[in-house]
Length: 241
Image (tube, rainbow, N blue to C red; front, side):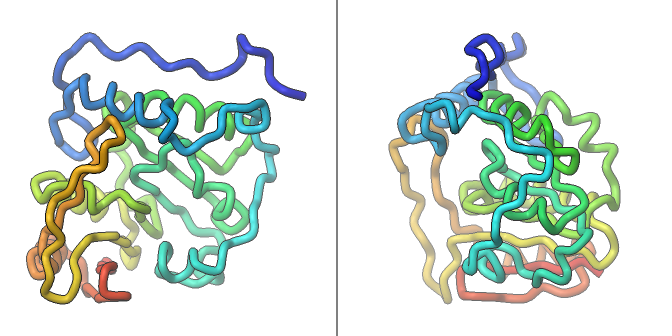
């Protein structure tokens, strides 16, 4: 049965402050949140506007793990996912959660779009293992999470971050990872070639940045990651100690 119109998630009002600080320590303008909201709600968003797309998932939602998910998107095997706690940065409406909830004990998604998170929270309102947090509004709760996760990842997220932001997000990831946990980065680095910054006209901040692998590896090691490995040319993977 489709949810009543009054039950469907609506775009939350933006805070009055023009500039805020998120859980990574990055200053975020209210206008940036607006742009990401426009992307999530617009024709280039990741959902189809129909009753099925707006219906909540069942409590035991679990989709088959796509063949490409491991190791391209997640650098560990299915056995290591069993009972794990994972944090996804840039989760959007939670599109990756259904394929992980059949394995993990806890899935936490972070995003800056209040609209995307409102929809994610509604759709996963019956799922006991899924949680969603706003990087600005829930910064206090997120910064209280230390050594909570076995893995931190983002899909089509990290390469949209300029170096000034990326290094702060990596530092946050190190703090919330358990000893021995892993951080998966998706970057535009390619064997000595630099990917130029480019704009994709999607009505939001959607630039691609190449921070340079040497700098990423050096920063990961300075944070305390015990080993940093390359995988698949475009995907550096950093493991904590």
